[in-house]
Length: 297
Image (cartoon, rainbow, N blue to C red; front, side, top):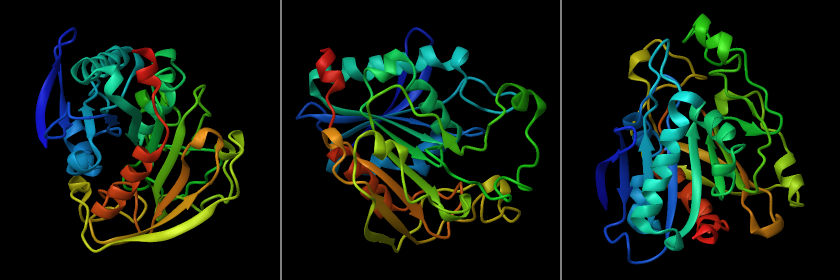
């Protein structure tokens, strides 16, 4: 696979690109992968290591970093949206819109909340085929436990609380004004309980949820929150370790859209995804219908 740092010429901001060894040998699935609040692109790349499957599933992954650093690193519409559109433009020019089989937003925590916001922007709504929310908000009800982010992080900085009253507690997402597949993946300790229904599945006339075989990982993820090592809790996340993930899908959604909930048992917010569950999520994404970018070619 290929890995390099690209430059967004209008802003001169850098971002990571991962691609197959032969990127122009056939259709690709594009991923725009957004880190969470307080994080950076390099951490996100290891948290959701899609690059490991660039060859197997013909992925082209762009992983940028936000511009805002104070009072905490976070995605901001004014500071970042033009850059993110430029990143998408770069990827489309590099591979050609006609060669893009699908385009997904992937976001962890505040990066997931940012994905949710971007999907209400016409640029992204007209191009994105799916959204993978990695603890970044679920379309529909979700209840967070009292221990979520507390006391590990403590109260939000006042400047963040004033402008982003829901950050970084990524719970319920707003139904976007876009036709997309949607996968919500979360740690068991980040929620009180997983709902048994999905309003997004209802929107597309999907059937009642079905539990697929669990995904069992014998290897740990690649990264965790080292700054809170030894003083974290189960909700925020501990050190990487093997694990089991439960997969729930809502079948027969209109247009073949993929709608699913994934629960990583005994995991919290910051433990990097294990290899087999990463692969399973990618398999679900590339199997979903795409083609919005092709239609614009």
